Image (cartoon, rainbow, N blue to C red; front, side, top):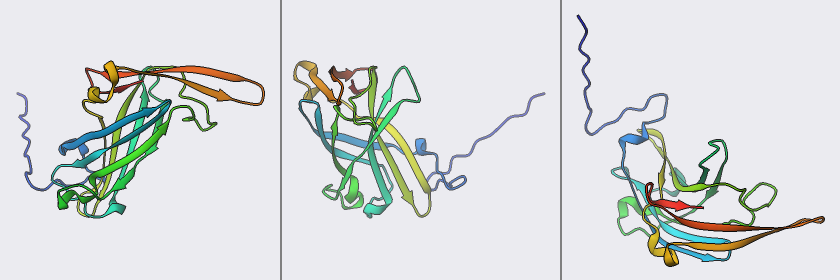
Length: 182
């Protein structure tokens, strides 16, 4: 005879385990409000927050853009975003963000994005006094309206004392994940 397992859901309070709360318990509201290109330089603005958890202090939130290589899980690039206090709901005052990524110099050595296929995500890390640290990465959402003809292409150049390399950057929307794919 098997044993029946029960599971109780605690509605308004989620208890952290070892100081880290299960981020999947909280929905992330996010939207990219501006995305533009100047050659290999991408500018991005928007907002992101955990629904139901106030963002009233800028030093309790960290936001970044993460590029993940689809073929090599270990290869990823993280670009911190600047927090903005321009969100219309006071409860989520620090939800806004802005940032720039220069795809011509993303590696530690200042070289362009290595060859491969990458998806872009927003990383959200929150320190909450009662919940602990909550961290999650989500796709950007629908960004097609920012891509002319659903596509962006540019040349990336890299110079060293001994050589000059040229790369092509091609960007589109990953329809399945609803995010930017490079």
